[in-house]
Length: 113
Image 1: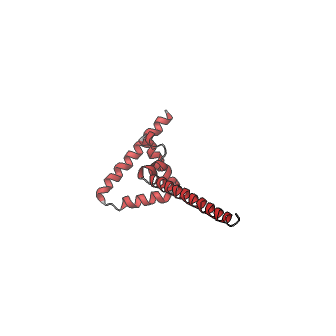
Image 2 (image 1 turned 60 degrees about the vertical axis):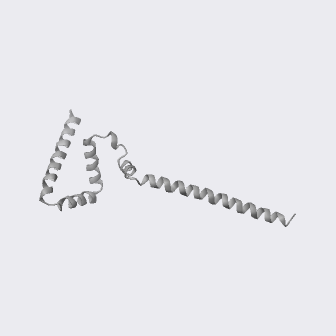
Image 3 (image 1 turned 45 degrees about the horizontal axis):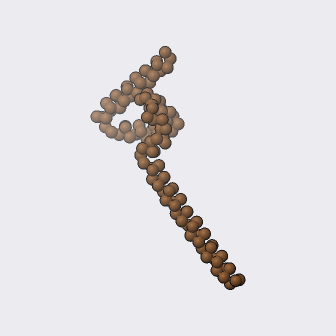
C-alpha cells in the first residue's frame, strides 16, 4: 500500500492545483468584465460626478469651479484649448462667461434669500 499512497497524494495535489487554476481563471474573467464595465464613458462620468443626474446646471458650474480650484492645470489647459480656436470662437467664450456669471449670481441670490 505504501507505493500507491504517494501516487494518490500526487493525484490529489494535481486535482487541487487544477481546481485552484480554474477558480483563478474565473476570478480573472470576472475582474476583466468588471474592468470593462468600469471603463465605459458612462461609468467614468458617474465615478467623477456621483450625483450628476440630480444636479441642476448651477450645481454643475459650482462643481466645475471646485475642480478648477483643486486642479489648476485643468483650468489652464482648458483655457489654452479655448484660446487657440480663433476669433469666431471668441464670441462663444464671451457668451459662456456671461452665462456662467449670470448663473453664479442667480444661485447666490437664491441662497441668500
